[in-house]
Image 1 (cartoon, helix red, strand yellow):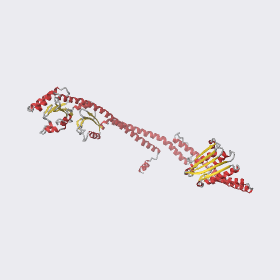
Image 2 (tube, one colour):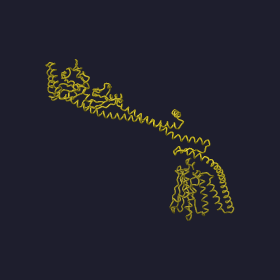
Image 3 (tube, one colour):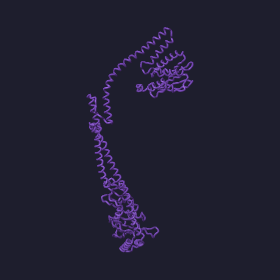
Image 4 (cartoon, one colour):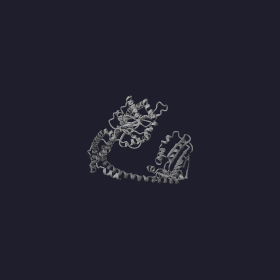
Length: 587
């Protein structure tokens, strides 16, 4: 009801205003929708291009990282395979009498010598440290201490640290840690490898090698792709909780949870994220960019699209205004012409175009001209109607005259003792009464059978009792109503086409039965039969019966004809005595 009231209030009185409103309501939403769709398509295309481009760039960064990390790994292997350093570590663990400061100086000197003579790329290496089995630390590039572990419980703290346990668990594999394990440098991360004695069969551990690498190495890794926007991160998540090894933007903190949860949280903050897993370091390289930053170029497209949509909207309104004028102007002419006609004007000078409105206008002009002619015809029609009523009254007199005449013939023949003529006259009179049936469409089946009996009596008087008539109809059917003159024409057809042309006597059998909802009549004769049934079916009598049967009882009624030359003819009639009301009404 509320919506209906709103529509009623918004209904404009002028057709032109409605037309303009309809154009605006139809065109503007479509234009806006197309603009939004184009903007969304552009945004999706930019995001897809960015995703593909950044994945390729991250793959390139990972390849660069592999090259740089391979130099760190090579430095690990060159130190581990250095015989002097291995001897020094073995002697440190076996010779406890040597003064610690002498051992430290000797080991550190060998590390420095090895470091300076190494062929590996060491420009990003900040320090190299070796921790022997006595948990003494020997370093090149930093002080010879254990950093945050340098306390009274140093040994237990180092043994309980995850990097120490992983070094033994990895059995010589290099592990990349997200930060400086000594806890001194924020701009470095550590790589750890178990130092094993290659001279023994079991490869007994003789220390741990730690190389601290400057995080400036990531400048080389990520600058290789030449990206001008967004931020890069290297994330370590082997221990479950993601840790930022490198973050080019300090404004992007990592949240809590697993790797997927952290990336999901960043996406909720409006970041478009691409990642690539680096096999060497087991770190995930990530590129992040704010969606609004990425789609900054789309703003120009959005403004251009808005301007184009606005221009289209204004153009649509202007065109609709012009078109509405071409439509409403003829309508106004038709309106004026109708008002003039109500005032008695009979001549209309208006000229209309050959379109729908023009058809309406020209049709109204023709109707107005024909109106006067129809008034005159109406007067003549009323006079003719009176004459028709008089003829109907006269036609009602004729049957009574015919009945009286036939009754007179009957009594004259009876008085003259010409009983056959009397019987023929009375049968003809009764047959005539039954066929007229007081103007009704239907009659009881009993009366239809009486009609046949009178007809057969007349025919037997004519043909000297040549025809036998057998009637076998269920008594339950006699009181039912049926369409008149359905059976008698079939009996007449049997005599005319079958028995009259045959030599000798002939028999007509009529049976009537109830089959479900249907009444079935069968009329059989033993006449000459027919080779071509279509000639009889197309005759007036059978064709009339079939059409009346279909019209009154509907398409489920039927009339079937079977005939064999020299044997006879059988007609089967089937109908529902309770036809649909609308069918009966139409008939």
